[in-house]
Length: 323
Picture (tube, rainbow, N blue to C red):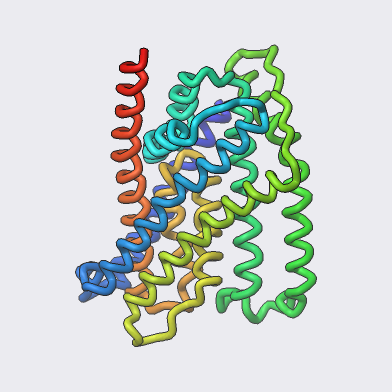
């Protein structure tokens, strides 16, 4: 009952945020249209954003393979890449869990124990949330939006940087225990009362490596957003800094991720990102940039699904020929 209520609330939140953004876009684009995205420089920047976003799958798979290896589970990078690329498009289905279900189903074909798969994915999710929270905090402290720039707390940026970083370090140390608890909780929900979380022998270098990979993902999208913003403004106004755009995207991503039931954070991320950009870009450019991001993420996921499916079919044909 609680799960259903959360999904309903998440759906209501997504619809409300989507309506807010549509109304905002309607006012901002009065007398204008989206054809600006088809200008030569803007279209080129949009293609760059799509390419940078599409890179998130190959980089994330590096960390996933690393996590599985710490549990003595061997799996080829190419096969894991095909699995993740194929299943990520499932996040556009209501509930925002289809990509995880599909990923487990395909990865089970590699003879990886279900306990190891669930634990690696739970740990991945926790590390990603820590990385996103850390990136959001330090970038927005470094380049805060206008609404926060005059807060008295901003006078203590250096201590805040230190506190936020220490908090991230503590979260990384506690992440294995939290991941084990989360994996056990999911197992009990499935009726598997005898579930035992596998041992995760992560070295500090492995933890830091995975964290840096997830943090890099947000920076890649931030670079793409900066390219598109620079092309949209075309010298008519200063382009927001790369640091600010990275923080704004990370903040909108984590809030969209935490919104239960919102497919791929639809509506929530658009509303949050447009709010962060309110004093950095003209309204019309805000809408165009937010629309460009949604186009890029959807197109990037579709491209990954396409080549991932082709790669998966090729690997299966090769295995069939070998057998």
